[in-house]
Amino acid sequence: MGRARRSRERVLDHLTELRRLPLGGGPAAAFRERLRAELLSAQPLPESVRPARRSRRRPGRLSWLSQVATFGLAAAMMLSAFATYHALPGDTLYPLKRAAESTLVRLSTDDVQRAERELVSAKTRAAEVAQLLGSSGDGPLVTKTLKEMEESTRSGIRRLERAEPRSPKINRFARDQKNMVEPMLERLDGDQQDKATGYLDYIDGLVAPR
Image (cartoon, rainbow, N blue to C red):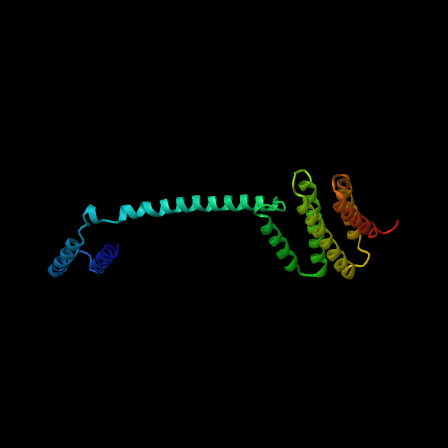
């Protein structure tokens, strides 16, 4: 490629020199000989060693493979994120889900945002308990998740009460959680039922009297 470029540049230089000659006059014999020698030295390379044709296809092929790889990676990441979002306690991806939640809480810009994210985590734990109750052999996981639900709730409420006293967000959260947890009571065993009942008593006290 570099040799061909240099040859073209030399030919262009010669053509420029020819343009400068006066009309009606021909180039000198020395110039003609030099031009002939330059052109002969610029013979095309044999097909077996010419890289131009093969190199034209390579960028297109690499670009296509790159697009396929990028699409595959994006699809894999989306499937992984979906699976992580729906992971339940005991699943392989569940620690990743909890780590993502904790990161969001730590990255919150103020106490209100942090409190809201902690309350979202509490709602997520309630939904996980409801799903765990539909499977067998998950008693310890239910107990642990109920405990984490209460911890997130108390932490979020304390933070929100400091940042926004008498915030209507507290009332809405308490009503939503009551609607989620109360139907579970008859499906919980003794200790779990006591823990859920204590939790309901706590959030009932958060609702401002009308």
